[in-house]
Length: 56
View 1: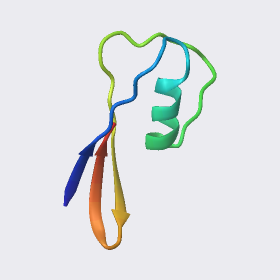
View 2 (view 1 turned 30 degrees about the vertical axis):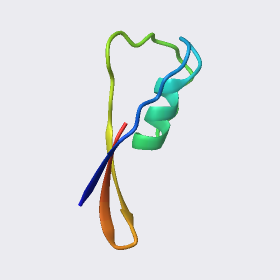
View 3 (view 1 turned 90 degrees about the horizontal axis):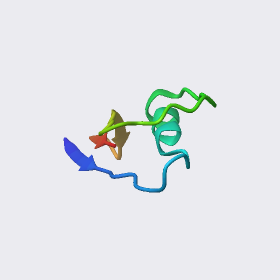
């Protein structure tokens, strides 16, 4: 097993949370709610027969 921590940074309102939700959950929403503090998701993928956890 591997764990990678990925950080999304950028200006307010550019789509960081939207990108995170789309990648991790497969959902898309066009509503805007400002994130206060820290928000993260964990997505597990298989890569070359190895389990890789992405903490985004």
